[in-house]
Structure formats: C-alpha cells, structure tokens
Image (cartoon, rainbow over all chains, first blue to last red; front, side, top):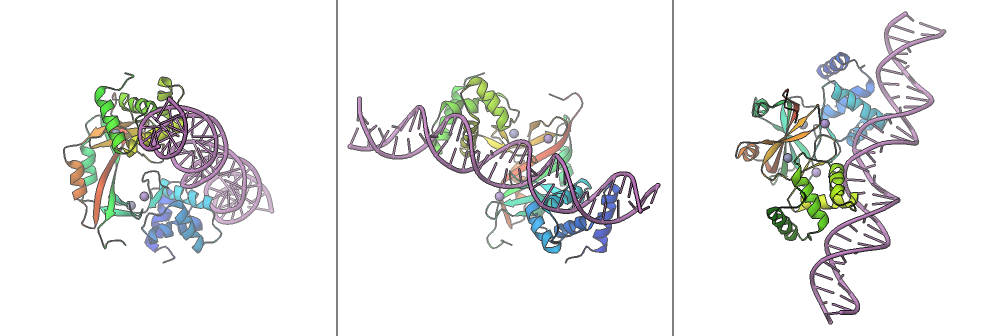
Length: 145
Length: 145
DNA sequence: ATTTGACTTAGAATAATTCTAAACAATACT
DNA sequence: AGTATTGTTTAGAATTATTCTAAGTCAAAT
Ligand SMILES: [Mn+2]
Ligand SMILES: [Mn+2]
Ligand SMILES: [Zn+2]
Ligand SMILES: [Zn+2]
C-alpha cells in the first residue's frame, strides 16, 4: 500500500487542520508509512521508508512531520529505555511489549477500561491523565514474527 | 545523613561482590546519595550531591558507579520520555508518577502482586520478566512536596 | 503580481551518555 | 616484601539522537 485510504486521509487533514497545520505531501507520506507497518519504527526507519516513496525528503522534514503528527494526536511516541523514540499510530489504549532478544516492540491489547482502572488506583494526591505500561521479556519459542 | 548504615553497607558489598565488583569509597558515597534522597535524581544531580561529599569525584566516575549499582541490582534506572535517566534505589515493586508541572518523579506503591498479575495478563506468545508502569499528570492542589 | 506565512531543506549545534587511554589502587603471586 | 595483574578512577574526546538555524520553496490571500 502506498496511498492513504480515504478514511485515513480525512482523519489526517481533520486532525492537522484542527491543530492549525496544513496537509502536505510529506506529512501524508510519513503518515502512510506509519499506518502501513505497525512495528513502531524509529525516526531513522521512518526516514528510510519514506525516502523510498518520496526520494527528495530530508531527515529534518521527517522529524518535523512526526512532530506535527504527534502534536495533532494521530501518532504516539513510544520511548523505551534510552533507545531512539519510536512512533505508533495505534490510538486505542494499549500496552507495549519489548523483546530483549530482537529489540522489537509489539502492541499488546488491554482489557476494556483497564488503563482507567489503573489510574484510579492512584491515591488522591495524584491525578493522572496518561498511563504507560511496558512489558519486557522475550517471545515464546516459535513466535518470532 | 552522610554515612551508610551498617545494613546498607552490607547490602552494598554483598551485591557488588556477588557481581564481581569491588566496594570503593566512590561507590559507597554514590549509593549513600541515592539512599538519602528518594527523589529520582539524574546522573547530573547525583554528581552534584556526591561532589559535595567527595569533591574529587568526576562525572565519569559517577556514571561508572551508577552503572555498577544498576548492574548488581541495587538501583534501578527510571527512564521517562527522553529526559535524562533517573536513579531509584527502591527495590520493592512500585510504579512511578511523573508530574508534568514540576517534572518530579514519585514512587507509587502498588497492591501486592499487582505487577505479576499484569504480567499474567499477557497472551501466551509473550513472556515478561519486567513490568513498567508510569503515570503522568499533576499533583492535587496543595500536594506539591 | 506581491505579500505573507507555513513548510522544507542542508547543515550546524546540542546534550546525555559512552568511550579511550593514562594514572591509580587493591589484590594475587612468588 | 616486591612484582605482576586486574579493576577503578579520571579528564577529555567521541558518539548519536534530536533540535536549531537560516535560507529557499510553495501556496494561499490580498
Ligand atoms: Mn532493546
Ligand atoms: Mn518532564
Ligand atoms: Zn503501540
Ligand atoms: Zn522509583
């Protein structure tokens, strides 16, 4: 897939517009790269993939586009340890699993309402607007995908 | 407090020894700094505090000592977003709360067994040996400590 | 057509951390 | 004890992901 679906194109220009940004070919292409492979690529990986679709794009623009997508809420940054920031376009609440062997990061679905329940666990002195849950370990044998 | 308690001194040389490291004055002092203020200092903050107790210490040594303490299991690294790594000597399972307003990081106690239960939530394809739970938000009014 | 402002680009700057190589110190060997 | 070995500390250089700068591009808006 190399072209945004109508639905995603709409979500993109809505979200960008709503936060005062323009829709540009670079932003569309970067967003498409993120939607096509949900493997939490780093900025560098996004750059490589985007460059193969749009050879003139620069690293700085990839960072700029990612920042625009994050600031309009279509993409989340995923930081694991001190590794380069990864990017995730999965907007539903979910956790992450980080494989120590391969370094890959997977989305882990969570039971409905669990993230909110975790936040409720906090004593009254704290008020959380976001909850981050990361597992680290290894994939069961034969699950390396 | 400027001197390790006998208990902590024992834990330190045990843990260091068990992982093939020597006990040195620098490592003792850095460990003491971490035990004395549980505010999750960065390496830079640890450096400043340690230097006031041992003026000859260098930044590189602080990094080396922190690495030794982490690798022998006495201290945990806490990474929040892309901020500098913080250090936490609290070995019991706990979560963290990161205040968006002050940037401070607090330990949040968790119900007994909760971290393991979260890990059990994972489908069979994943096997987690560590679980990280971070809340972000702000402190209730009047709780700024 | 001109102006305006957002966007893109190449390359320089930044900053936390790691690396290097030399000095130092503790332990092990003879 | 004296010497070799090995781990530790140190100052400073190197690394690297990311941000910044300044100049060029482009597409509305006037
Ligand atoms: Mn990894
Ligand atoms: Mn912060
Ligand atoms: Zn994700
Ligand atoms: Zn902690």
